Image (cartoon, rainbow over all chains, first blue to last red; front, side, top):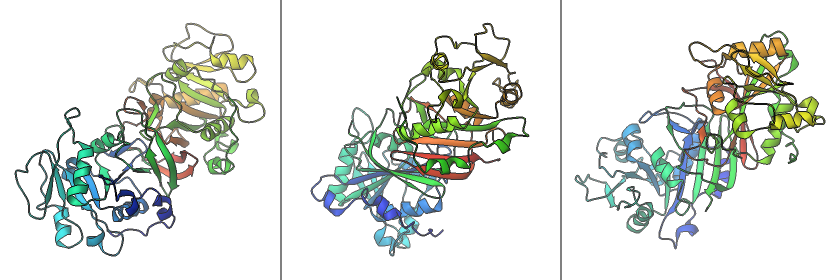
Length: 244
Length: 244
């Protein structure tokens, strides 16, 4: 399905929140944008593994515009196993060249590139092959797939995010990453003002209901540099995580 | 604390969603506006009974502007027991005359007018005395307080909303009601497109965290006639509940 044209006022609205070359030249980690679409009741899907359309076509185009501006696009394995997303970039002249590299957090090594939408797009030269993040030597190594072995944080028992982003920059020259989900990944990174450079949230004007998959961090999170954009049915918030 | 001036573009933005005399002349129920402020993660407070500031001063003034346009303002007993709110209207020339009448859902008869902020404002001629909604003859009848005896819905075991709004119009000449909370009341009325005429939600750009009190109806709720307003840190959605 083709994208609707990009709203004219979006590039300027987004500009200060996008990665630019200068920012990450001398840093050991990439520029990280945390971005997702949610309903009014802060749900990102109707339920675990339920593919759900929340936002208006105009903000879907915005998502592809954001993908155009990032080297990598990171999602958890739950999202790829549920949605089988393409994660490529349909905005701009050359999808293959402009698509970010998919980065899949797959600590339990459950996902396969073979037979996936991503593989289909890669074969058609409309997307890049993925980097799969594992915590130990991969049992199966698939063709065209790179593997990033990243330690688990002993306290949280979760991916050591700081270490992972260092690996992505150092070993794979990923200078900017767009984190798109799932909820579990988002809820962890909302607490990391030391890692996340920009927060871009689309709010669709609908309620998905209390059994939906929600984004709500374990504690209060304050923001700074807030700016809103309003569309036909959605609004978009750009902000940064406050340091408190 | 005095209000900041009303944003100039708000009256026109709100106009189509406010009650007007013509709408409720021949109806047996008042015009009902469901309105509340929430965080990005759809929380209306940091926790049960925790008084929480979510919105910017400019949208707080909007709330008083809305109160100016309604005969009644309805909240659940949980909210009055927790926040001891004044529920009066500080916008406009004459608070006593322009304040809506507080309507307290107190099926367990736990709240008392005596010693409350509402009583203080009433004595100072800055607010009106309340109507207390009970399900049986009140054990204690306080001075200046009216009581609306409303049946419980046998299936839901909750207030029979349709019946209640009929009583408010018929017995107390309440032609418009602004429902401000708490979450339990909101979650019930979000399902009632047969009762709610307008939905006005303020979203503050902060996260209150997963232990906060959340607004999320038990099922998907679609909206229609959506319109957004953006302020300095908040956005406001005006809409109507779709009939599906």
